[in-house]
Amino acid sequence: MLTSADLDTLLLTLKVAGISTSVMLLLGTPLAWWLARTRSAWKGVINAVVALPLVLPPTVLGFYLLVLMGPAGVIGKFTNWLGLGALPFTFAGLVVASALYSMPFVVQPLQAAFTTIGQQPLEAAATLRASPLDTFFSVVMPLAKPGFLTAIILGFSHTVGEFGVVLMVGGNIPDKTRVVSVQIYNHVEALEYNEAHWLAGCLLVFSFAVLLTLYTVLKTQPVAHQLK
Amino acid sequence: MTQPITARFQLDYGAFQLAVELSLPGSGVTVLFGHSGSGKTTLLRCIAGLQRAPQGFLEINGHCWQDSERDLFLPTHKRALGYVFQEANLFPHLTVAGNLQFGLKRITNPAGAAGLQHILELLGIEHLLKRKPDCLSGGERQRVAIARALALNPEVLLMDEPLASLDFKRKQEILPFISRLHQELNIPVLYVTHSQQEVAQLADHLVILANGRALASGPLSETLSRLDVPLAQDKKASTVWQTNVVEHETGYHLTRVAFSGGALCLPMADAAIGTPLRVQIYASDVSIVLEVPAATSILNVLPATITGLIDDHGGQSVVRLQIGAQALLAHITSKSARLLGLQIGMAVYVQIKSTSILN
Image (cartoon, rainbow over all chains, first blue to last red; front, top):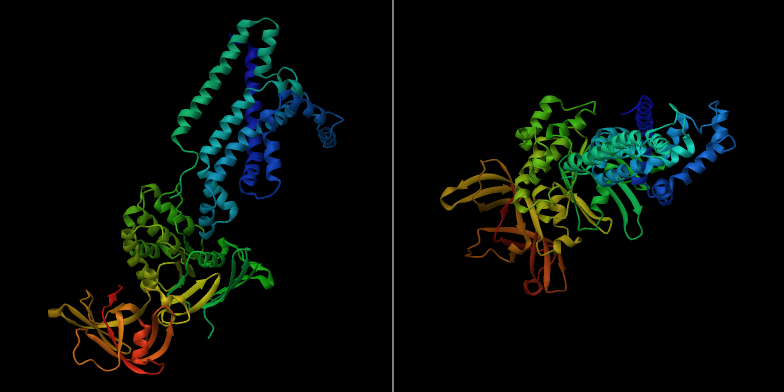
């Protein structure tokens, strides 16, 4: 059975994933919009930076974040100056690291959806008196809805499933940074296979449900409607 | 005379340059005619503000929309225009009603419910309001797009080849709606096309574009009959006359119409006495004689004066004639022109073999 400590890790995991996903959407949407529309020479560089977490071992990303966010790092000095203290081994640090790590899973589907929409609906909206910001909310967001759903589901579930970055940046502090994946590791280290089974089973069912939703429910809606 | 629409644009894309300076009337349909690459669509997009010409000036009914000298450029969404794209470009996530409301919600001077109702009736789309664009035919989508633009009560309606993506049948379905527009609505329409047929059917004013330049701009029949533009030498060159129905000769299935230089016999037209008729006369259907023929099967023989004559050095001559206030083009062989001794200023007779009625 799930112990109360296990339940706490589950709740904490959902909290981290929920907040990270919101952060990713807030930062990732304008970034994906820019990437989808820019002709800047920087596009390739930014695309590569966003995609880095896809290929880097999580420990590498975690290591750099640990150094940068630590008291001697650039980010650490900045957060200290703001009076927030150093971020490593805190909940906030965990959210920042998770958001960075899962960013490509949010940015890439959004970027693809925005690219598919193309120029035409935006021009139509402009001739119908809609300002660019108005057009984004009244035309782009509804047309990119499947892209947003995919981004939210992938961003959220990928954050739930991460381990390496969490361990490097967040550590293993109950109620602060101890998420499900770390707790499973703890159980296995302590040879508590029964407990590990329960938690691992929860993640397995969750992940399968997420992917099933992606491939069945969302499949019925094409990534972007064809403009007629 | 200053015209209500003044447009000057210059832009340079390397391979393509646009340099036009136009004064256009504030009512009726102005057709911007040209082949692909002539710059007609670019010109329309510059007028809409969808493209920004580095050097540009645009004034419509006293409102300045662009003046690069003063660094003034009104973004598209602040211009009181209606735009119809080549593809209807309806929003797929909204119903027809939603598409119509999209612009209406964002303007301060809507035509009002009565105005919208009138537009729906004019375009025959009242029964489509609840449908999504996916469930409309190509012709229906384009009619909705026209209604969506008109609902804004714009100062000018811009149409970019609105029929180009439709098949012949759909074109015939929409053309009457468009020609009704300028009879019923008092706004200028700028209409881009590469189809001579659409020019003949819709234009009141014609601008001919080639290689990013305006070769000619003026009233339709005057511009069609200009010998200095390639259109007059085209195999399908024609002139268009505005006429009025005078009488029907029912027994012969003929209709007599009057124009400023006389009268014409046409195939029976389904139109009441007094109705205006637009008549198209192909240059290849016009022949020239020096005297009134004693006996001819051709009904329309009219006195005319030669006002222009050019030889295409390919065996064919283009003759421009004046009949009253109307100009007419005739394509004849260079040999005939020589044998008849045709010269500018000569009084001759024209025989018009056939005519077609455009509305």
